[in-house]
Image (cartoon, rainbow, N blue to C red; front, side, top):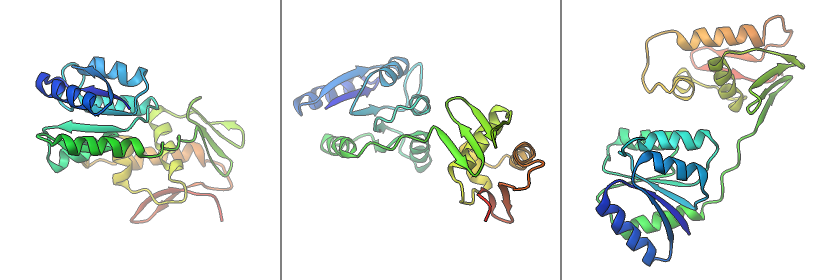
Length: 225
């Protein structure tokens, strides 16, 4: 396998380079976040082993960037940050697995092999459609019955999230985390305000309403009937 190791600790990097090489794997190594990001985004790897606390660009920023750009290479986060909140943050940022230092090489190797065996994830749909509402992720356009709807960037993100979960109820907390990246309640009506603005653009003067409030639960986009 071809692996990428992004690790700034020299001893850990040397140990892993030697051990993974002995296990028969080719390894590229970056000792800072910027170099790691360039390799992760520009080269093809079977698995990426990524430290969290890195100079120049931290590990979570690398994860978010490569996932946003469509890189779906499995990522094993290797870090001394072992708290539950740290693990959740890593997984939410796009990690596939999380291993805390100090670690046993046998376990790391087993996890790398397990990640490499996973079937590739299905690419997200470029075009999302609910009834006569269409959202194009690449062109960043939204139309309803062929008529263009102009949305602000955050409104576009909100609609995309709702349409990805079409037919399911999306809670306020899910929207705060998925659209605003808030992992706390800001104690404002930011969600309600944006949903109201979005509904005014998508459903205004339409015989069929697509954005619905589910009282006491959240919001949903669904086809009529």
